[in-house]
Length: 358
Image 1 (spheres, helix red, strand yellow):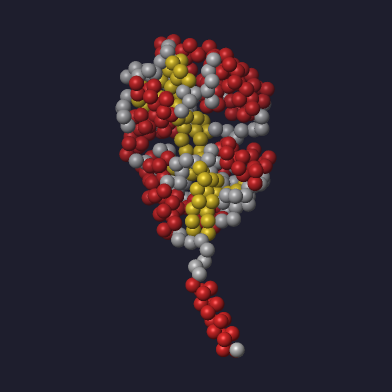
Image 2: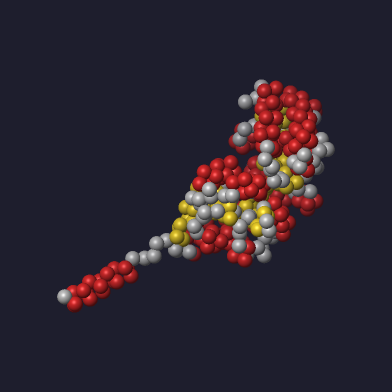
């Protein structure tokens, strides 16, 4: 009987030893191109005990998902830098980062300092930068060589040959063009409403100068490539793609500064795989992995020498668009206080109603 028990115990121990430890899952909540399959496989090969589970999303959906769970369900999220401070104060869905576990030495100082300043609450930092890019103008320089300001989209010399998207970017850009500082006005919402009213009047009057309002990158690209339009408000990545096909089509940073966004790394409050999350952050910011990521996103990483890590076609497009002065003139999106998005939404609805756009 004793021998049987000993053998049974030995067999049980042997079976338990043969079962591998369960792999840890890193649940990543991110943008559509921020987890390329090549990079995920490379990470899982380096860390065979970690499996990456990717959910693609956007700013609004990230906030909604994490609000619904109180910060549970994901271990690492990638909201834009201006969508963290107010959200965290109101909903408490993130946890502070342990910066000692992140190699920030290779990060671009201006971007790191900017994100830390925007996401520090009670002395704790809630995000670090990952990818960044801009919104501004795109022009066919053979047809619109002098275009350099948001307001130029409404210049009669380009009548019927320009485009824009009716979203908050054009509200902010046109405000800067009219000599206002919309981000400073966030501190005085009555002032901000007066700016929005001025911008609305300008954009309603501009309607007849436009060929059409674009809604997605594909229809904007089609209008530019066909010559239907010679200039538009745009994301820089769209202009970079078209530059590869037509060197006359370039991204133009407006003279008041291109509007710059930074997508970050932030950790949901009830995440369960912090160590895996820190490993992913450090992994994707290694230079050889930045190259893979940049080829997927079309944007620059928040690391030193990021331009040199871009694919050759993107690097040429960036060089054609930006001078060092343009980079120093960037207008980074400011933290959005409560109420601002509703104000902007109502302004956009007013413009749409007056111009007959959808």
